[in-house]
Length: 462
Ligand code: ADQ
Image 1 (cartoon, rainbow, N blue to C red):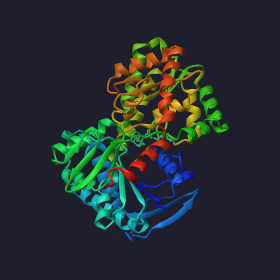
Image 2: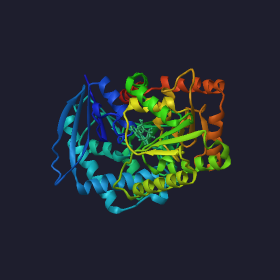
Image 3: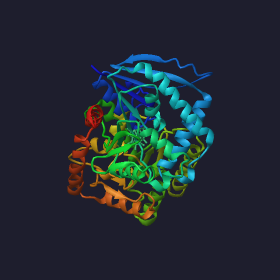
Image 4: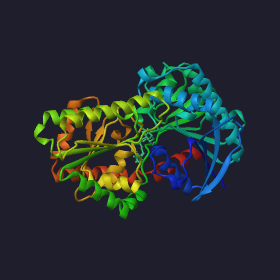
């Protein structure tokens, strides 16, 4: 029987799941996938070594085999902090202003992708399905093919694919996309990102593209590109929401609000998540509705990430400063309107917080999908559900139209959405919840995995 080999930048063993949120939504999704198939998960250990040796460390934890390698500091600087997180991440989130085009980063990225290929290839048997994840490893499929692998190899991009006009600002953009066309299946979060990718292939590469089936023919190879919107592990989250830990967390939050409505935000501390813009929206709400300052308390949970990258240090300072300003201007003896917590929480605790908070603000400026939006809905009490305020620019908005959709750049729009959410009658909250819970429950991560793996096994196989 063929096995599933998952390759991503980092691996996260099941017991570490949800602890710091550092791995983002990817960790939970992949652990579910690997438990179902007889899987191996390969990636960087997160550790630095003196010199690259190519040796791998294999472990078996809770039904999942993980294989990891260490990388030297120069690789981490150029590939991870450099090309992945200072070039591709900002560019793919439409932040050309933050994008760094350093030659050394590009070289480091190619070198490390070659290292991934070298170390992963011996783990792959002829019939295995190989599933590569995310922007760190765009060229890996081509590198594996260069080592003679004829396996079915698929790739899923967790973040947006930028419009062609932005993407062409990347030096050697053709080379990068040409390498991607060595995968058999390319997955995107939404139809919008998929369309941008297909547009690029047709317009810039001159590939033969069938927009309906996603078939792309280029250089004698055929690749299928499709949208596979990622979901959450609904059953697991529901279970966690019923635990004593969740109950205690929810009660603790409720007690601390002193009869005010709690609104919550849960995000990795990242400029794509629209955090300073969100705080501006809350400030605007207080300015426009001074009589309601005592009605609302906002809790922002945002553990730091990628702290070695300068733009991440800046966003942290900016958020702390903005929060401080609002609290300085609006606190009273018994109220601090914004609470900013910068540490990780278990999924059970998050479920407790989600259920207690009557409003959730998910307002990224750009986001591949956004799993927090889905987790919040999944954790609600069906008899008294809270309101999701969701950015139009999150991939999730394409499936979750019954949320209160906002333009995260506009403080007025945010302020208006907060007021709408605060005043929404129970009947309307239930109507929206019932529509939203359907997609969150039915389009879950198990289906996502199955859809991708099924297509990877069969799509376009001649
Ligand atoms: P992320 O950018 O990390 O993921 P998101 O989808 O919101 O964004 O996932 C964040 C995950 O981290 C959620 O599961 C959340 O519960 C968890 N998390 C956040 N803060 C936490 C905290 N303080 N403690 C514990 N857990 C915390 C990337 C893309 C997204 C895409 C996912 C999955 O950027 O667009 O949805 O991958 O494909």
